[in-house]
Length: 163
Image (tube, rainbow, N blue to C red; front, side, top):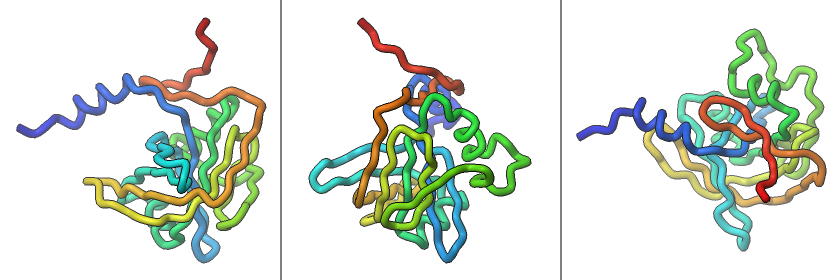
């Protein structure tokens, strides 16, 4: 029996996740995409994992660069999430008008986020239509200001503390 991918997609809409933008640069070409398939997998050594669809341009550039930047978006960055998710089709350069900075690898990190990770890929795994990238976190910065951008059931949500 083969699982219907649309049924799985509908079920996965019940999972809430923070929103990140993963960026990479190779030979002067930079690209990035909105990703919520991101997880911290080890503190020592510092390892994270992301999953990217093999046909994406970011996958191609990240695969060549073997490094990436990850920006955890704040609740005020929904437009940035939409741009990097490809929901603003008239956007040729996803970085146009954005302030970015770099740390160790040269991957652009988007200012205004909540946290930034600069990572070097240490291993990859074939995962169906995706590649699972395991990366060492080389350096990290974080901000004490702002709330995270949350994605749930195809909509953005804010966060509030439960008492």
